[in-house]
Structures are given as C-alpha cells and as structure tokens.
Image (cartoon, rainbow, N blue to C red; front, side, top):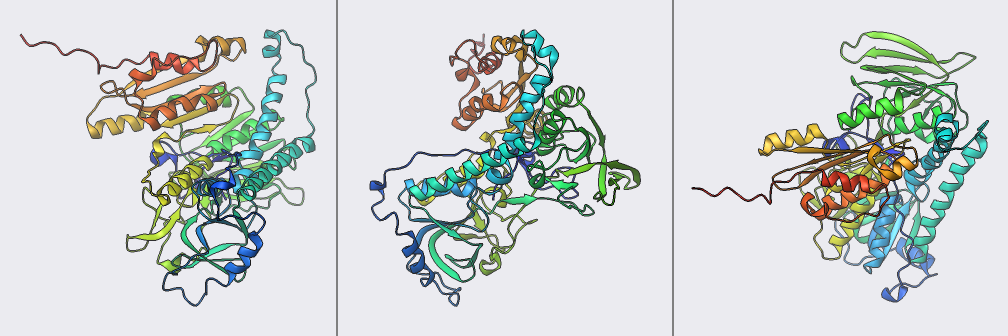
Length: 556
C-alpha cells in the first residue's frame, strides 16, 4: 500500500508525530501517482513466457522450505520479489522488467495500494468536482469572465461513483501493465521467512535473489478516538462520500485535512479544524501558510481551534451528535466540548509493517518503520545492512509520498542492475490539490536559515506574484505567490514554494533543477512560452541575484 490523499505522515495533531517531509523539508501529507504505461518489447527478456505464470508459480511453491530459514538458498525462483503492489511496488516491478529481472509482486489486498484505491486517485476525483463547484458558485468570478450561471448543484452518488470508477480504471491499468510485461502477481500477504525466502498466502514459499518491502501505510488514529466508519471516519471512509454532513470537524490541518476541507466546503458543509500546534498548516513554509490561510480558510465556512488535542471522540448514536472533547495541548487541561455531525481523522499515516516476519532476519522496526540506509537497504538490530533486502515507500518513513516510493523502488532496481544510485529526497516535490493549489520542494525558509547558520553561508529569497502573469490574469486567477530560497554565493536552489493556479504542475521545473544540480544563474536563461503560467517560475528565477560571476576587486 502507498501514500494517501496527500500522502502524509502522522501530523502534529497526533501525540506521536512520525518522520515526514518535515524532517527533510516540513511535516506534511500527500497523494500522488505516476503511472507508466509503455510496454517494453518482450524480446529483451528471452526468459519470459507470457501465459506460463501459473506454471512458474506452482513450481515456486516447492522451491523453498519453511524449515530452512537459517541459510540462504543457492538457486532462486525469482531475481526480485516485491512485497506490496502499490505505486512504489509497481514502479519497481516495471523498472525491474526493463532491466531483464525475473520479477514477482505479492499483494494481500488490491493492486494499487492506498494511493490508487483510498488516496491519491479517488481524492483527485472529488477535488475535481469541488473545483468546478467552487468556480460555478463564484458569481463574481463568472461575471468577470462574462459568464452567467444559475443554480449549480451536484448529485452525491454520482460524485462518489466518479471517484470509485476512476480508482477502478487506474487499478486495472496498473494490473494490466504488469501482466503485459510478464510480472507474476501473487495473491496473499507476504512475509519474510529467512534470508532471500518469502512466504505468501497460507503456505506458499518462494525464493528470490533480492527482496523489496513496499507495504505502505494505513491511517493513524490517536488513542481516545472511536472510529465507526460512518460519523467518525478516516480518509479511507471519507473518500466513499457516503454522505455530506452539514458540519464536520477535521482533526489535523495538514494536506489531507486541507484537501477534504476544500471538498466539503464546496459541497456545502461547514468545517471546524482541530490542530494540536499553535498555527494551522504547520508543515508549510510560514509565508505560504499565512497566504493559504487568507485564501483557503478565512473566506470559507471554516473555523478552527489551535493548540488543542481531540482527546476523545464519540460517534453519533441514538439521535445524539458526534461529541469531541478538547484538551489544551500545553497544560493538558480540559478545554471545551464540540458537538458536530461528523468528524474526519486526518492525523496522518502509520506504516503497515506488522506480520512481515522481520524477526526472522533480526530487524526491529522504529515506531513501526523499517530502518534503512540512504540506498534503501534494510538495517538489522545490530546496525548492519541485511543482504539482498530493501524497503521503500511509506514503510520506511523517509518521505511518505507515492511518487517518492516509486522513485525509491527505481533507485533500488538501478543498484540491483549494477549501478550505484542514491535518490536525492530534497528534490522530491509535494503538492496539496486545493483550489488554488500549493506545492513545494526542498527547504522552507526557516529550515534554510538553520542550515545556513550551521554551515556558515548566507541565503537569499526571491518572490513573484501570479498577479503579474498574463495567463493567470486571463483566467481571473491572479491570487498566488512563488518563492525561491537560494544561496547568492553559489546559485544553489535550496527550496521553492508555490501557491496559485496549477502550482502542482509548476513545481517540477524547480524539483528537476534541484535533482540535476542546475544553478539559478543557469536556469534563468531557460525560455518559457508566452503567455503561460510557467512564466511565474521564469520571473522567479530572473528575480534572483547571484554573486558568483562578479569580478573580485583588484588589490592596489
């Protein structure tokens, strides 16, 4: 399974926040998928015979014995076995086939994991509806464009069906892409029985030269919260949109909470945020967070309580509403009680790593996460890497995003193919698909200042507004800001943050620049089509002032 709506780790609203983008950039939640559909010609993989998968699987059952856990096998059923068929496992499997590796993927739930079935994909369907509803309901916006609209409405079941159908379509795409390339899909929960040995289902055993754990995460629910799946729900339940409450409390103001607030308010609900920290959206760059509150919170039917824990939530029953007991986060004293129609628990994600058989290889999880090094190699209880065993995605906690999981899986396969590869997590972007969108890559300004102080260099900040962009003004969407944090002495890009129309698409120019090591003084000469939103980034990079090319004064 993989990351959710905005694949997020446990947020500040929980008692035990997990490592997230915050440890690298800022704590957050996210949902994203990148699906690859191209089919590699099978002539490159002469050992594969499409249609013989069932025969190979039956042979594999007897290839490994549960009684020989201690010593690694000398012959293998597969070059690579992946436990978990979410976006991370899928990305690794497709890349492994491209590299000529005989590959199997094990899934105990459904292909696509959290992202496709209960996260990135269905949430985007709901957000597409909320975006259109929000635009049609904005009479001033419509009149400014010369458009007259009356009585915009929606059919709840049809909206829910749109999300469900999209998830089903993408799930089938993933399944078919793996089958077409000859990846064996094995059904059942997978566990590690010993070095290079895996069990799946009730009593099926296979061996593999290398193993990747890609089991993802599940919603994290703090103690004291009773989830009934109807009036007190996690994002898993909310994505089904079984009803639209008049008043819903959202516990946690990270990416998951923000996106659902966008959906619910567009569909007519009133929202109350409950946040443990003293400000909303604590994982954002502070300047972007303030703008987001002005644009996404204040004008809408949203109120909030900050600096409080939801220590007890009781579902609605027998005509009584959902009851939420709030406690001061600092003093731990009871504060007040809320009565609402529903409550969404958006306190992040917890790794799904129980039952993996890690004890058979002397691996101990850390807060549920599988410890890994920078190359995703699993580390045992003694601090040594476990040969031929890797862990990617939410299960290792490095960066709980679906596309990060896929990138980690591809990085591992590169290593298995003889190329040393280390993923630069600071170049991995994140996005929140509200209206308007928010995106980021790299460090926030406070994090950059802390790094600069520690390493003794200076930072500079450049900004540009969407109000100066022709395409944004043509769309009557001038509300937005792009922010660049960089080193003026070298031109190194430390972070980019965007709030505005299509911010999630715009961020990739910056993330690719960081990944490739491109400096500000070089990228500012890139040409952008006019008039396009991409010119927001063009103007941003041109606004930066780098001193690296300045001639030094000649001593007299």
